[in-house]
Image (cartoon, rainbow, N blue to C red; front, side, top):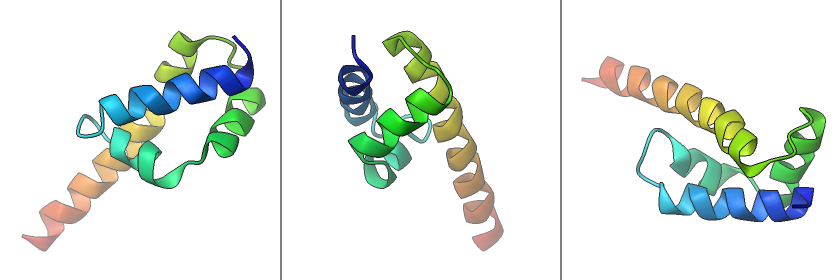
Length: 73
């Protein structure tokens, strides 16, 4: 797969997992071009590695969101 194909497949994965562990952040905040740039930057060449890499990013932002929500209540 090319980087753009991986980025497209990653976006599909993010949409399918929108309500799981922060994937909504990837859907709402990352364009396909930005995803492709990040994949190239960290030298990701497989969809599996891309899901792992962006899953970590999603979990970090999901954790921050939960911390903020806990502060509110």
